[in-house]
Amino acid sequence: MLKRLLFPVKPDGTATSAILLIARIVFGILLMNHGIQKWTNFQELSAVFPDPLGVGSPLSLGLAIFGELACSMAFIIG
Image 1 (cartoon, one colour):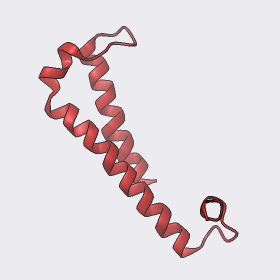
Image 2: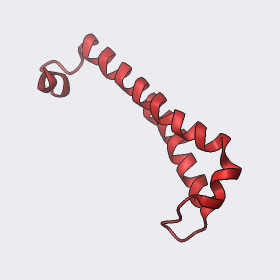
Image 3: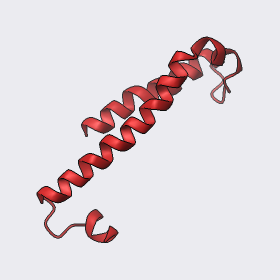
Image 4: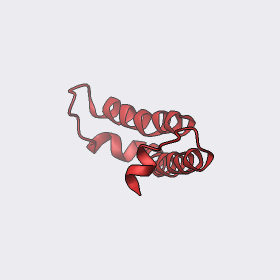
């Protein structure tokens, strides 16, 4: 079943396109929720957010928010 979904014989099938669209929307919304939570708690998180890139905690948090909001919107659009 999963192989048929990922590698369809007829890649332009309507059912396959609809399933993939629904999956993109669901996973994009789930990822966006994490970004929205970080955005609403920016002041509290900016002091304690990890800084793996060495650019400062607030900028690292901003990059994480960008990744979770803007990139998930682009993922939904496809």
